Length: 296
Image 1: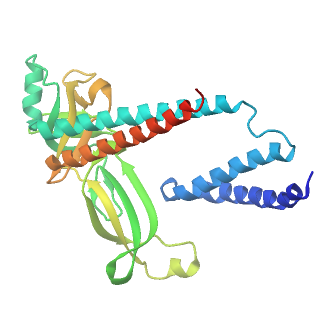
Image 2: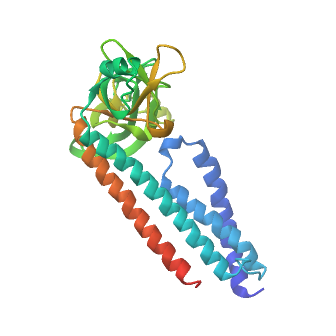
Image 3: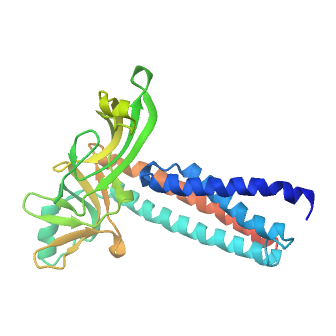
């Protein structure tokens, strides 16, 4: 064993200690407040420690031929490109539907479905409703919220991030004047404008801060309030029970829920998001082509 490998042994011990600290410290932190960059750094450190063991023994780091490894990486990039392209196509379909189809009243769509004329995939207009009400950090009763709580900086500007909070009611409903339909959703398919509200800062675990006056914080939050007008991009179908209805995307996928006064203008933002997915798919495909061309 050469001198360089011996000198790296203390660094390996320090790396193991950092991984133990990360396991206990970050594991106790809330999921929303864990910094992704720090998690990625500790993941890279763990990979380096795994590769350090065969290097110390003089064994090759990759026990396969370089051509096989390059082909595997190229194939993985192609899979990622296909996924990005499929996601972009799904977002583009929602954007085209939201921009090209006139919103239809839920009551009219239910009447057409009862008469044997399924309205199909489109944009449905109604009001948001939920069976369980939540409260956002800004104190707003809502069906869902996605909030980033920051300390108040100088001159009322955004300060350091204190917490990241998300909560969603187990079931969302679109309510018309006479009917309502359950909405199949995922958190990523809920679009609402961001609003800034004052809230009380969560105290730390020090005695002085627990006994002192509560600090002020600002919450940048997206909130879906019950009774708020909204649009749902999906397909209306009958529910499992007689007299019930549900809204879902194509193939039973989640529907898109858009809230806010400018909900109809969200199609442009979705179209730009779709093109970003297509651009990522193009870059990944190009990288995969370069990797696979090296093995020919």
